[in-house]
Image (cartoon, rainbow, N blue to C red; front, side, top):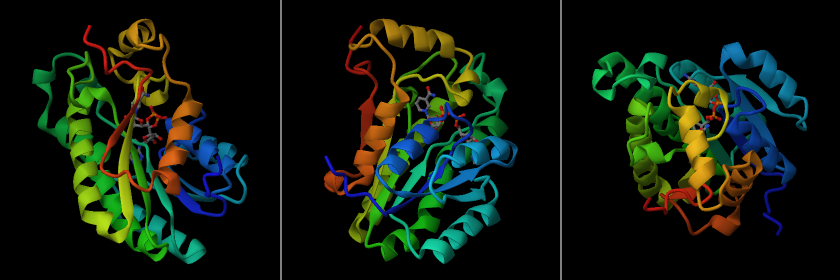
Length: 257
Ligand code: NAD
């Protein structure tokens, strides 16, 4: 199926290394012929530059979503270079390590604020900066990454579950707000995957093992299938869906026990 993405322009926030979900999505979008801009946190720069060598003429920009001037500079640079944008992939999250272990009841105000700022507010901020560029392109697609811990209590996921609930609500509000401009906003919810961010969650190994053993398909996600769903959501084939959480979790969420 031709997704019609050749020559279109995507920015992907959240590549840390080759295991990043953002990298799987980048490869899928690149394979469809999209032009790619990647952003990285400073400490990830070397690794991301190496990965970017596999892409055709990428734009590479530093972006810590807690630094307003960096977020603004990213979209200014893209406007200067491309003059518009078709797709935004937001694949990033963070919570202080101590908040991802132990009792949720002990979550500090500071950890709560940091987790929600980086993992949820950043989507609203990025959408606001991207909107003029997406509008210039006649509309576009914003895609973010979430997890079932938003609606169910998972061991050790703690404040990140609260942040994902806020992220999913933001997807719905952004979709309603930006829909009249032809901008769609969707979230992908995979099962547990072995990435750098996942290693910071104290209960992750158990979540991963459990998902592999009991999910309907008796496996966890391949990064490529998440990339394929993101490419579909970026494409005109998905033009009728917005404000949704798209589960691709090998049939875990549908189970009763
Ligand atoms: P990852 O560690 O590869 O990616 C997380 C990214 O967040 C990194 O690139 C990191 O640089 C970025 N980040 C953190 N703080 C930032 C900040 N202040 N500014 C800019 N970037 C920042 O891990 P991943 O698993 O690929 O995570 C990507 C997304 O997928 C996250 O939203 C995560 O919650 C979500 N997700 C992951 C899983 C899983 O099991 N791995 C499951 C469902 C959803």
